[in-house]
Image 1 (tube, rainbow, N blue to C red):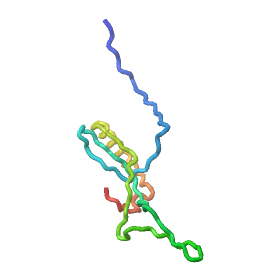
Image 2: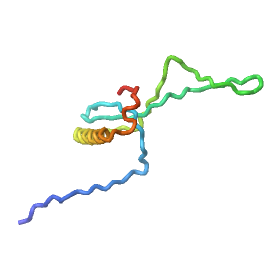
Image 3: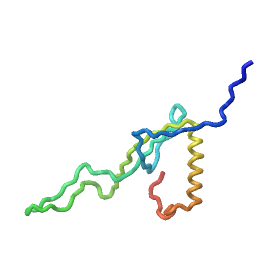
Image 4: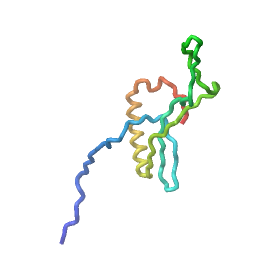
Amino acid sequence: MTKPAAHPAKIRYTYQTDPSARLQTAHGVWGGVNPQGEIEMNFYHESDSLPAFSEQLVAPDGSIGHEIIPGNEDLREVSRCIHSRVLLNYHTARAVLEWLEDRLSALEEEGAPGMYETPLDIEQ
């Protein structure tokens, strides 16, 4: 009679970083549940939009004047650049949620410097 295969006492995970992996800043995330029941997250960073062009006046003596940027002064345009897209199944989403909650609790216990000093003006 053969003995049933025993489970290992432990599993070791080794980590490798893909050479093309880059550190990304995320100012926000947009997404939802897709038709396959996965959570789709699109991480983005924000910055003021660059104008299509700018101009400078040239004085008769050849000196350059101030820069003129076309646009509506009553409107601030912000560009959101989606740099990472992530799909999570239910179980992975739960694990990520627990991981984030643990990290946030640790950060709040430490009273991270500047954590409550600057009000965020971006609604998520």
